[in-house]
Length: 158
Image (cartoon, rainbow, N blue to C red):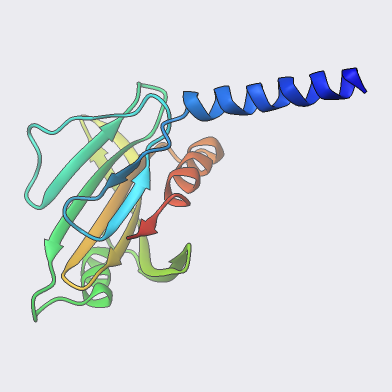
């Protein structure tokens, strides 16, 4: 009986430590209704952002980076029209996706940056006022796609 109690205590302690070690605080995406949870070690570089870009997250040279964009829908933009326009620009096709019950669009583009080619997995979502886009820069490996999915699966609409 004592061994079971000690084992349970060790298990509870280990779970508490793992929860403390993770970055479980949601990070709001711009001023939209969306948030994600950044994996341990990710940081934001908030200077030198492109137009409509609200964040750039990175970890190290061996991890995916991703850009976050947000723009007002107004009366001229819809999620589908924007996703299709961006996909057409990159000569690809957008597809409907659902993440945690949130409807969105996805397209995959091939882009060059500083002489290297990347496969960029782009997800777009909308709230009442904004369209947000998360652009995950990968080198097309299963490990990186798993990391993309881990981040994306933390998406919530507040």
